[in-house]
Length: 252
Image 1 (cartoon, rainbow, N blue to C red):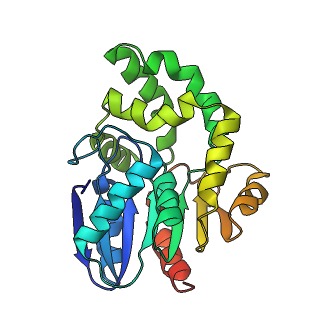
Image 2: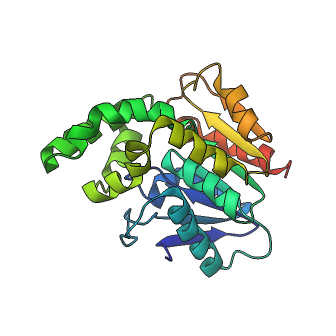
């Protein structure tokens, strides 16, 4: 599926992939600065923003959509640097496991999905309930993630959300329906294809065991934590993030 997208700038390509319920516009403060040095492709995942719905929302399918869009956007001969936030971090990881890339930046999305299952499972009855119940559950899950964004940026991100119940449940179906052991096995199979440089950037500490766990799956992975930057470290400190992208890309 070709996704709704925007292509700006010139230079080596970067692809930006947003989080669940959001859209490519979530990256807007970073687009113009990146476009000074790069060709930037911003996408809306299926069922998000202006992109159509689909029958499946698993990470491999979402990554295949992004690849279709990369091909249609004609980004040139260079392999793209894939940057994903939250759900987008899983998608760009799946993309790099299947398609040619020069590197991955995964923003605040631990790949230890079996840990997320514990949190999500507690909210499952509400998520599968009435529209009001679903909305309340989603707010419970997403609202704490907005700190420490300022009020203006929080309002901007919230205003971009397209929270369709079937889409959200479709995205989270893998986590909800698989056992922790099955989730770990799925991530391990995905990680086999991750051979490019991989920066796992977190605004919330994923735990002392996570760097070693991730390195065991993805030997190229670097885990970097920006304390007290929350779920949106790239928006909380935009200048620092832009500098980190340039520094990371210079090594590729």
